Each structure stands twice: as C-alpha cells, then as structure tokens.
Image (cartoon, rainbow, N blue to C red):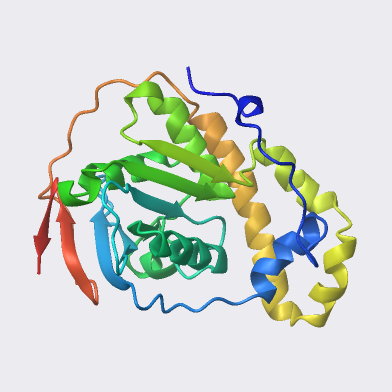
Length: 268
C-alpha cells in the first residue's frame, strides 16, 4: 500500500512573499515571466495523432537535459486551464527538472497552445483517452526508466481521473497534481460568487477587453468539465481494442522531428 500524506511528514505550506492568499497566488502566474528558452538544454517538437478519427494532433515539446542522469524517468508536465507549454509554471518546472538531469515533455492538450491549429475539438478534464493515447505512443527510448506525470489545475484533475480509471494498470511510475479542483461544478459557482478582493484592483487596471474573456472562458470550461465528468465517470479498466492507424488526415507540423505514429517514432 502506498504511503499516506500524513506518513510523509511534509512541512506545512507557507505562502512566499508577496503572494499571500489564493487570489495573489493565482495572479502571480500572470504577473511573473519566465524565459521560454531553456538553453543549454535541447528542445524538440513532438506530435501525437489521436485515434478517434477526428484528425486531431496533440503537440508537445520534448526537452532533453544537457547532462542527463542515468535512471531518471521521463516527466510529463500537463498544464491547466488556458495554459500551454509556454505557461510560466510549466517552464519553471521544466527548467528545474532539466537542471536535475530529467527529460521532460511539456504536453499541450487537445486544442491548447500550439495544438490549437491542428485540432478540431477541445480538451476537458473528462478526456482521459487523449492522455492514454499519448502514453501509448511514447517510444521505448523515452520510457525505459519509467514515466512520471505532473498535472496542474485542470490538467491535474484529468490526471487524477485517469489514475482512478487505470488503477494499478497505469504504466506511470509516479504522479503528482498541483491545485487540482475536484468538485468542478462547485468550483465554477465559487468563481462566479467570489468577491475576489485581492485581484479586483489588478483586474480593473488591465484591459477589460482582454481580461474579462479569459475569466469567462475559465468559468465555462470548469462548468463543462464538471458535466463531462458526470457523463463519463471513472469505471473499472478493461482491455481496449487498438484502433487502426491509417485513417487519419496527415498535416505537416512545423519543426517536428518525431512522427509518433502508432507505437514507434519515425524520424523525419
């Protein structure tokens, strides 16, 4: 049986100055910046065609450390709502892990960030099949030391749902989630009713034509995600029939070195 949180003897959380309170901690992602260039580490574009006959392709950025450490698993970083591979928290996590010798995959879920141009449909936290398909397509040279997944916010909720579906059948060596909402409908209602005193002044100082739609998008996504989880609840895993590979629309991905088609990777 895995250890409980209480047995880990973790220190209590203390917010770091000046990010006191949930509002400022949320806004810190928007107010801080992080360099997209992870040099001296090397990055390359990878793509993951979906098997649901939509023709959708998920894009990711595979980052390899300058000095890899033997035995370190691949770490998949999954962004939250309205995020992507360029989100500040994703870039910071990737650089920290790369400096420690880990290879990282910054995954853009369906319709997010660079994946948007190659997807007709959009992600939600109930869409665990997309993540399952990504894991299935990873080449063996990336997975020989195992795979670890880290999900943030809505990406963490999707990861938790996936773990609930797979149980001990999951190929993941470990997983972690950060600030993952569990009751999504209640979360959306809280966002609608919360007075938001800490963020009010900052929001008013921003361009309302740019700031307001983003908040509205997050609320609508949370509400729809809650409905999706109700519609597709966790169920006991069963053997899945492998879908044929040849019935997808092929689109060129700028800068893609790997064509992750079927189980193997073809170098272009």
